[in-house]
Length: 439
Image (cartoon, rainbow, N blue to C red):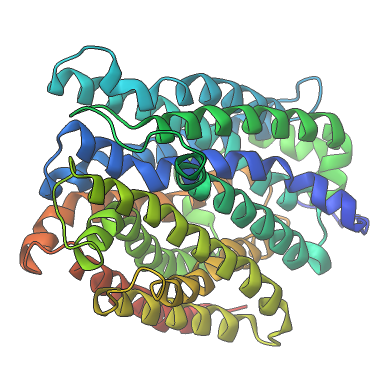
């Protein structure tokens, strides 16, 4: 049913840059969420064995929202594009929620009321971050030719990690500038609250820039460049459903998904337990009300920023590998070694070393899977729906890991730093699974 593709044009550097620039702002929001959710709920009074349950909502919303966004954007054309309108709507709502979430403990609610408010705010925040994030991956799949796709995703990885660095460092920077990093029991410190405010402002500015700079192909041009005739696309709009698409997905879709399962479970535990792990390993404290625990929370943001810097550096190295599978596997092994080192390092500055190594694995996770999958999907049509469904390989492992987090924490002795070793093992298993992928 497909006809011969028109060759997608080569894009200059700035065109590739503009396709992904808004990701910088979206990733600031995601970094603030990733680095501070456990800290916020621990401050509100959550038990460490229950912390992982708060992490079920983000991937659960992702697995619901992203396929819907992908499918709807495949089928609709609004003024300004098929992907960008969803980006703009998602970012706008995310900005509003970012101003509410960190104030959960400041509204005079009971402990349980503050947690419920925080959970609802987290649900809306992650829903709309997912809505804003997915269009960037689809824009590259839509508009970039195969020869430039690895470069385009590397630029996206660079912007993603640069945004992460900023988001992770905000609480540390604001504390350094004199904003309070401690607060009454059950209240989130001002350093965290102002980090969310500033992140929200940057997010909306970046999305406005992308909206003004990127001009998507109209439906006829899209069909010509992506190998699906307009008539076929119209006919398939209502006939294909997600189950049919998954049944017809190329094997690469599933094999990359297997690798993704172990990788994203590993990083869910890093985001969930790093604050407790660093507080116990470096500061020798476990009490969330203590100033030392809050200092550890700030330092985790610094370590996550170091990880992002490592990712930026490694993202520049990845294209030098002649074999992308080797690059993928080696990166994950390096990241796994980094995870395993964390419990054995008691100096806060020496912790930079394992987090730099973890950054190598993260860089490959951002760039490699979508390179393999979008190339395998060329000519299939329904690119947005497929990439939305592929997001399930990111969300499902996090949901499973979150459900099992308390059980695994108990099995490893209730020390949160031991969960870093679990993450390392998972990442190395993911590296082994890379061998099943066919280019």
